[in-house]
Structure formats: structure tokens, C-alpha cells
Length: 354
Image (tube, rainbow, N blue to C red; front, side, top):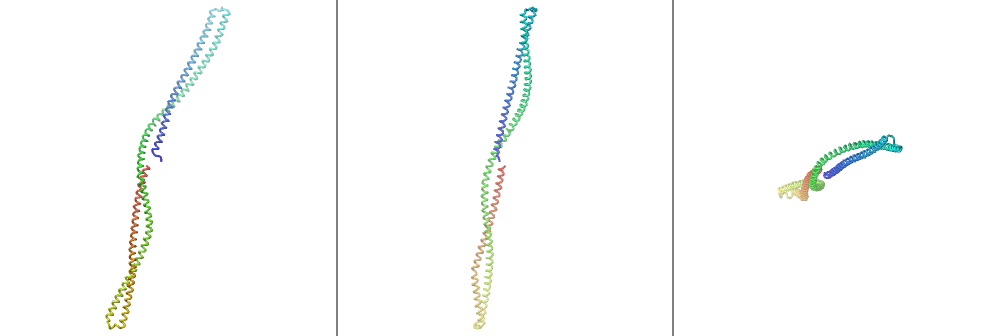
């Protein structure tokens, strides 16, 4: 898109060229007027010169004719005065004079006819020339009217040009201010663009972290499964331990009962079969109690380890969930910032396009 400054400069060049052409047309009009005046003066001068020459020629012919006629009349008068009695020599001389005068008179008449013909031709040429001059004058007047209208149009154009020139100067001033505003907006857009790029990079890192959270989620699922298995195994172990403790308690009660029974029977039943049976049963109960105690003792480290694993798994699962919530919150904040920055950048770009 062309800038306002470049367009105004192009318009200014076109206007300057039109003004130059109009000035040249005005100069040509003045030259035509001057040429027309000079041509008219030359034609008039030529007509006057031709008329003077023809008049001089006619006057000379008339004078010569008058002189010849005068000579003839004088000769005739001389003949009349002589009474017809002149001698032969005088008569011959008079005849010669009359003959010469007649020939000269014929010649003068021919010259007069030629002069009259020339005058007629001059008058005809003068009339033709007059018509040509009138036609030329009409055409020049039409041309002058056209040029006068062109001058009026030129004046109107100059007024319009002055108005447009004022508008152009105002546009150039506005263009400079607009250019400054655009530069200021660009200075604002540049850090915004950089900040958006930074936010996009951070968002990409968050996306990677979220992608890694998928693995964490898988690990969390595995930890949860492991935790469930541990809880199940711990519950079973605790149930077995409780059952063993109950059995041990029953064994202890039975042993206590058998001991009381043996004590009650006393020394008198010391060697009896029933006493021996009770002792054997008591020993069996004690052996079973010992086995249960050893079993419980053996199971206790596993129970402790299961409880430790359970605590660690719960802590790890809690950390994973907290990390996931934190990352998701950061991503939402980052996306909001990117959207706001992008909106501000679009507004600035739209303002710059205007």
C-alpha cells in the first residue's frame, strides 16, 4: 500500500506539470495574438501598397492619355487655323503626328484596359483576401474564446489546486503525526510480541510438563494400584495377625485353664492317666502358642514394611496430585496472559492499518 506522503508527492508533481502546460498554452495564446496582429498589419500594408501602385499607374496612364489627346487637339487646331491651305509638307507632318498620336492613344488605351483589368483583379483578390481575413478572424475569435475559457478553467483549477495543496499539506502533517504514532505503536508492539513469544515458549514448556504429567499420571495409577495391593495385603496380614493373636489368646486361656485344672487335681492325680493327658495337652498348647508367636513375630516386619510403603505411596500420590494441580493452574494463567497480549497486539495492528 502506498503511503500518504508518496501519493501527495505524486499528486503535487502532476499538478505542477498541469500548471506548466497551462502557462505554456497561455504563452502560445499571446504569441498567436501577436502573430495575428502582425499578419493583419502586413495584409493592410500590402493592400495599401498595391492600391497606391495601381493608383499611381492609373494616374500616369490618364496623364499620358491627356497629353496625347492634348497633342491631337493642338494638331487639329493648327490644321483648322491654317484654313486647309497648308502645304503638303505640313499636311504630311500633321498626318504623321496624328498617326503617331493615334497609335500611342491605342497603346495607352490598351495599357488603360490592362490597368483596369489589374485593378479588377486586385479588387477581386482584395475581396478574396478580405473574406480570408474575416474567416481567419472568426477562427481566431473562436480560438480566443476557447483559450479564454481555458484560462477561466485554469484559474478555477488553480483555486482548486490551492485548496488541494492546503489539504495536501494538512495530510502531510497528519501523515507525519500518523507516522510518529505508528512508530510509537511499533515500539509498543515489539515488546508485546517478544513477551508473547516468551509466553508461548513458557506455554510450550508447560505443555511438555503436562505431557510428562501423563507419564506421572500413569505412574500415579501404578502407585495407586500398588497402594491398593499394599492395603489389601496389609489388611490380610493384619487379619492374620489378629487371628493369630486371638488364637494365641485362646491358647493362653486354655493353658491357664489346664494349669488350674492340674493344680486343682493336686499331687494325688500326679501319676494318673488323666493328669498325664492334661500335661500332654498343655505342652501341645504351649507349642502351638510358641508357633503362633513366632509366626506373628515373623509377620511383623512385613507388616511394618507394608505400612511404610503405604505411607510413602500416599505421600507420593499426594505430591503428584499437587504438582498436577499446580501445572494446570499455571497453564490456565499462562493461556489467559497470552490471550490478553494477543488481543492487545491485534488492537494495535488494527489501529496501525487505519
